[in-house]
Image (cartoon, rainbow, N blue to C red; front, side, top):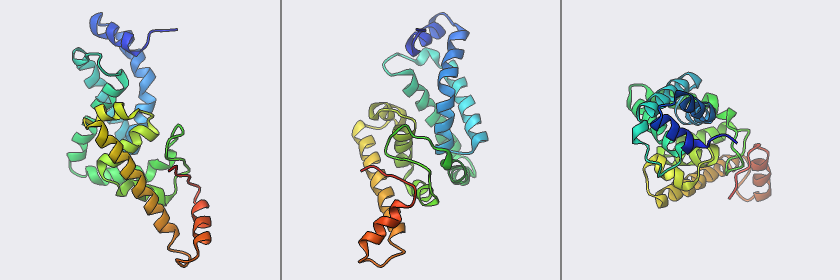
Length: 204
């Protein structure tokens, strides 16, 4: 087996081994870009932010103390870059466009969100508060633990759990509300059938 992430970081940091950092980029760039596509923009914007993230990571090697995983440290940098872009002019519009265009490509590893993503689910994602959406995508799509998401978002662990629980609840309510607009209120069975045909499974 080759060196793990921490060993590669040590090689890149102490020995200034560029090949070690290149290997870290190779290991993490695909999942990082997938996370950024869902969170903040189109493929082009995600590539820009991912590139800036790795530049900042390389420049900040000395700041890595080893108390966290390399992955959570990297995602924290990426999230800060996202927030900077979010504050720029037209960033909100890009966020909506990117989620609408790219959310259908989400491939979560068995978390709370299972896809094909319908338009209803995409709208539900867009309607979440930013922290709720980020926490859900980090844990359900990117596969981070609650503790890692806490470090990425610089939020208490309890807040992360709250964001995820609240976000999932809002999405369930949004999807159920859409399904219940078609049949009368007392036709519960028809409502449940309609929800089941949306091609989305949402774990409680």
